[in-house]
Image (cartoon, rainbow, N blue to C red; front, side):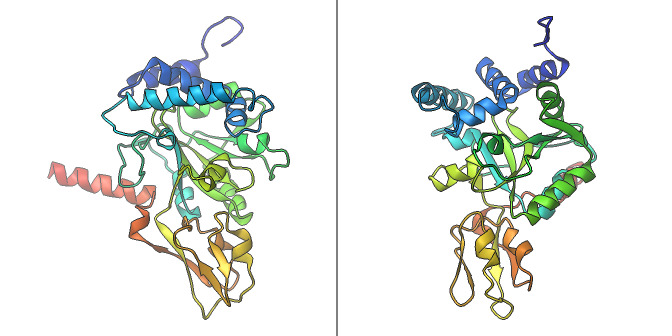
Length: 316
């Protein structure tokens, strides 16, 4: 709210779009507003890093139950889990670059074959060239955060304007090229790119986070058994003839999916196909290969081309 008590234009735009979302409720709109408006407090509490987290645990559990119950009431679903309401899709660097390079509005709905969750699986990009970089809430909440802090990319409207309006000290508008530069730099640091979706954020993709296992709440939840992250659809493959046994891949794997046993050995069950190990491998011994059981990749250019082809076929 402004001093005059009037909603900011970005807030009105958010609520306007939220009312148009199928199954939207007042609770989900309020949840989205609270999440976007007080992101740092929300994430710090949710990850248990805020000083009030322990005291508020019963309340937080109750709120979490209400969020899941509200989500379950939005459709004919049998068992909605917490991760269905908030989740990330691993995207290798090339795919992440595609997401910040879209020039026209697009709508790709109900991507069940790509986003394996019962909720929040649409890609609706309005003004996709409106990109904001935000100080990572997970890193800000960490006692000894990885640096730099400004690595979370908020993409499209109404999200970009909302973040700028409500977090002016921790965000700034950037170009698509600047977003690509941030992705490239984070990739070199060994940090994983995740496309994030949330039911309260209009049920769709809204951000790319560049994550490290030491700070990222979602990655820590994943390790604890809450499946908040979906594989890219790829896995790392090692060429034994090229492996120098240097161990850089082991050191840089954020999912602890690689070990050394005369050569680098990948645990395909744990591997999420982020591609960080391949980028860190100087001899080029590691590449990414498709693994059908890991799901379909989120490669926006391919998806748009397939959508356009389908549309042309329907018209024909």
